[in-house]
Image (cartoon, rainbow, N blue to C red; front, side):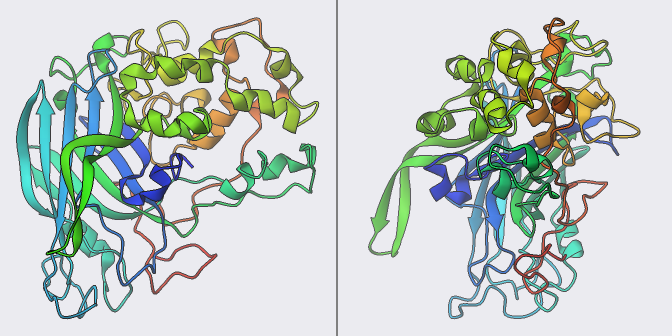
Length: 459
């Protein structure tokens, strides 16, 4: 979910499948913003001997829109290449890997970081080492140390990391896709059963993370650090993409397939769950290939979401007010497509203008919360989703409650939400490694040896 296997074609190409995007003012360095894009969903920790890695043939990008046009004004590009040190062995490692420089790691991967602004490209760093995956206590005996070595500093006050992490997203995938079941409330479902705790469908899964921490002044339109929350220049839009070259040809001499031609976007993500549960299946792959600036075409699915119509059917008598509400969902359009304008939430806005575009919108003048609430803005924590997105934000609960009508009174005071709208949830929490309090914030990935099918991955 969030964007794990969200479209038919990209589900067949996991290396290019963008699973989650996060953007937040760094809690431990509030003069910086942390941007995170995850790829390669549902990684089995013991998936060797060809363990997971970034695609050498994929162009990964994190984009910043700061002009209100829903277009990339600044892009950070990441290109990877892997090497094989010993071509006579099938092994991923030929002994313990105690440093990312160890020659016992048989397939190291390196990458470059390029910043593109106003059509001009500037390489920020080359030949940065990614860490190996977490194989097990003999192969990667101190994985936290290896990951720490893969946090690279460049320029002044800038950091980057690219490698495996525990999947920090949590959702009851098994229930939600079983005809919209929410286990804590399934006694009220059209096909009822006893209420139960939610089950995290991402339990035991790892992902590959690209994380970037840069000064706020690198991302704003005027290069300044805003202090006024109500200033339009304090808001940036964030989304990520993966692109492949347009043609693939098998090379008989090399014995591998090679890509040729210009790059074509095959995956993108801004807000969690947008393509997953809003865009119809027949349009999902096309949506993945388009820029956010063209999302006006999909506004009809936001202002009249299919899920809002299904909830009263799947939970008879639970959402009568939602069932009777026939107006376009201006609240969801604001949250997902334009940002929240002034006057909706007292003392807050993250409006990027009238251009409808699916992006995370982050008001960088909002400081990190001293006591964060995973329900974010709807719980009074303006530093959380949908003001950007932190790794621990409970986006599934927030979005389910919004679709159920909880946020309609923000734009239509005549509407009274159903009682269930403020209580509905899937009942899950993070059951993988704990989040970190410092960069790159996502937890240590589950190790192959330590993990067992069906139980939380052990770090």
